[in-house]
Image (cartoon, rainbow, N blue to C red):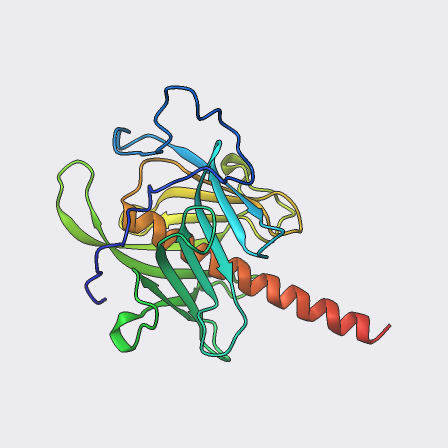
Length: 242
């Protein structure tokens, strides 16, 4: 994995959407959300909703919007772009690019508009090895700083579909996922879907390194976007035969 450039702005960047104010800004209150004072075990949950204006996704923490996810179909344009803030004018934090006719895809963390070569890192779609009802999982690695020791190392993680009720997942959902740290087999985050509209929430079970959080989000958004497109194509095929 290539060394990652500094993010243009930390992913803890946040702002209030001026079109949807939810907090009285006349109050003496710091409107910047930061998790820097959270303990390493602190959990937090993000809600993911469709932005009806842009067609992208808004990722919020309570009243604050931390990220906006752009979804694109244009040729030679990344399929997913994660921005800090409430629209595409925020700092670019990460990209995802699908590989034609392949299950793997590429991601880039940072602000490069047109990454090339080793600027991209691959997310590999692997199998759990079962002969029947095999479940794919999506492996990636990212540099991270240990919250306790401050040491820098590569962390290997994967998103995998789950039906575990103890994690809040549904047995019926095809789009509930868990994020697993491969060094310990610990489940560090869980995504659960609200409805077939590809909206849901992602719950981090402890504080995450900035790069790990952004990387995990762009990988998850790419997985869900692929499924959304496949669902749309299937719907068109069925409609065409009616």
